[in-house]
Image 1 (cartoon, rainbow, N blue to C red):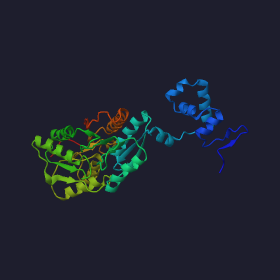
Image 2: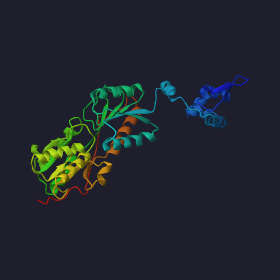
Image 3: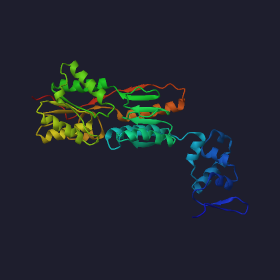
Image 4: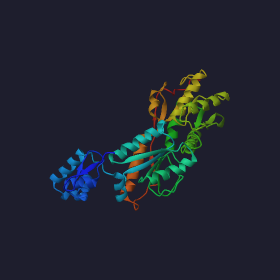
Length: 353
């Protein structure tokens, strides 16, 4: 293995490009390691150092490809500029859009994030937070994830509904979302509205179904349990929506519209309906939820309740950064609510029968 430096006659190292230490670089420049640390980390104390010396330090660091040991520095100052993010899994549009918002907010603050997927497994729900904490993250953002650990660090939960001390929940106004969705279908003349409920493990399943049922009852069209079906399995594929509607069609119950738990299940539902010879939206209207990227490009383009996922990720990251900046004495908001909108496309239409 090649040495990273050799000794000159005066005792100072002759550096070679590679993994040089701060101490070696300081000896090469005949300066103290503290001076180099101040300059390279742009510390306030560096303001007293002449510009010529700063230029020499930066030039030498570039010449010898010096890279600071951020792990050692983070242990010294107890700051890693790293956040942990826990998601169900990374392939679905929901998590990806939230992560885009998280990344956008963190990058402007020069923070990185480490991501772990729990895949709805109880052991991972408990192990992942500890693994992230052991890697010196400063806080944790959970996305559609139940909190199975003691929040010893600042925690923000996107789509979290449990009231836990030290945890801020970023949530959608589900009541407004249900009013938009049911109101849209009702105004198109639909009275037999099938509902696809989310999986039992999803944080939003209960509140979304309850608000949909309340909005429908308010209009005198209560949701019939015979045309209510729940997603099964933990696959992020449209297959779960496809299977749900297949089972509903097999029951022989009639309906003119489907209000799906999310866009992915709505896309699967459309496939099942068309395979059975039903046209969307002429025979059955389909309404999704989330407005993931694929919704606008599906055929037919999906009418959906837009959940501002990018903004929710950004809000979560900014809330966490604010808590880190304010320290333990800062005010911890219990909940931050965001508003939905309805995006009307081609998968819903006025009832024709």
